[in-house]
Length: 529
Image (cartoon, rainbow, N blue to C red):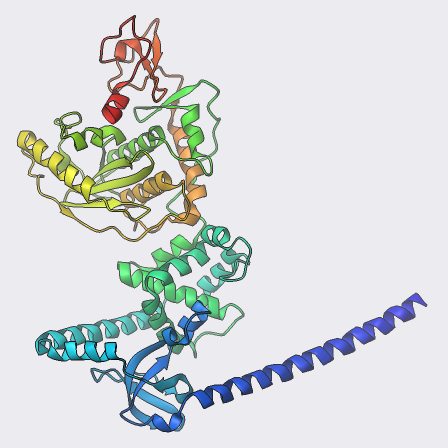
């Protein structure tokens, strides 16, 4: 009886499923028909004729926005050059004919507003030579863009991108998911598409239109065709803007790029244990700031950048110019500059011309890390700020410091120019220090600074932690004073009441008074006095 009842229900389920599918198919066809009819009613095709000014519907932009005023989903105006059947050939206002025809369904008459009229009048009244020069530049750029797409479409990366998109996306969609922001920032693929598209939506769309034509007949469509195609166009747009090889850009879609080689896990520091990394003292509490959601302190920033600079400079050779020679200035270097004192860290015995770049981290307002990078050969300064703040004050102070130093050293490095950094932004509130270290890692290895982004933050924290523990010399007696004498025998220690740094009493620069109840170290005096 149970078996018969089960068979009956199975037959009923199959029958009901077929009915549902048939109804869905009918509903879909009716919906498409109603949509076409509704759009045909809205658009007056009789008004679209050769010579008419029209707007073109931008389908890919509308799909990404998924909401908002329909007007913003149109581009133009264009002029109708010819009409064949239901397809129109358009040309720009400057007379450049578009290579792809557009269905009349995707056009509507351009209605000139008062603002448009004013803009057009202003353009007409401008110098004719300047307008022609701008138009020629735009046309030349568009031609280069399409040539670039066609050349790079030949690279054997489309299928690999589709596979990568499928693996790394891990079910993270672009809309309608729980904890969207958190999941988006943690997924290299989704975050990359959204970040690049937000900054360069028009260019990604241009690439997408051109790429669809190139790939339509050459690539077998799969379930991930649309996602992979959008991903490929985003990679190409990012590569085109930053003058990069698109194959290198693909590295940023990995959970960690290949130039980041994770060291083996080593024993953690024990309670109260300290270690020395490239001359910097690091304690267990300092290493713990590398944990997730923690704010990196100056000990970790100084230790890692010092290690990185020492490794890159010591291993550099003319035959293998794969990385830069780096001179690292500790974080406390610029603390005296706002008061007009540029004499505390002058580095008078260092020939800056021997290095490719100078690096200086600074903690703005004691709560946000930025990284100043000076390119010695080009005499340019870039300040990498993961919150895109205004850092011209730091640049001015650096220039003043180099001018005063050049009066003594005579190295010809008193004049510098500011260079705007590439766009790289943090998506949380505690990873500014990690971004400073990731940027430094990319630059010294001669990689583009956008290769490491928000999705890589957690992995990079672990990478820095392992590197410091691996290279750290433990159980040393190096203290946190600016000029440790590394004494032997019986050692007396004293702790700073402000920052809790530990120093040897013999390494304290100012005399200690037996009557004083508190002690402030040199670093804190530089920061807060």
